[in-house]
Length: 208
Image (cartoon, rainbow, N blue to C red; front, top):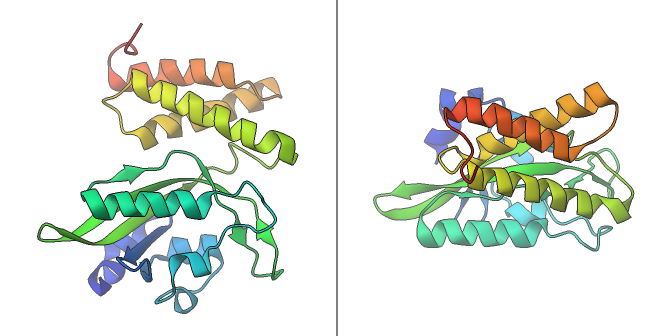
């Protein structure tokens, strides 16, 4: 596992990557993970993933630990990659102990194998907080649900494209519509994303 952390490929990635073993202890992080989490590698390596990144106790609807746990279990059990879609997972604020920073991610968990056995999971989590900015609590989770729904619907129309690519196009389309119209409009963002995905895929959306 140390070879992964020392590799130029791992450290050169702009997005945060983290390697966890079968006990869910952190075995490697890249510099982007250090930067995004606010933790230097010496505060991460060897620690249990959910001791370092617990749920936000101030959020009664927090489901990050439960959903990431389920994803890791699936990867270890089946030895296949698992994309979690859109996941809110607040980060501890190191500048203000006891407080958390609002964050939304699209985590991808991939198996690292020794022969046929999965011995670790490589997690890549893209920060998409700008697409789902903080809102009053009564609106935060419905908005996350709508983004997940739109991403899932587009994914079914373009099954040959990686789900993270579909979400990336949706996220960028959402930003374009919001900036041009001066207000959020997920329906228009979804329509724009569909047109762009048809160009990227080279075929109409399935079901049209």
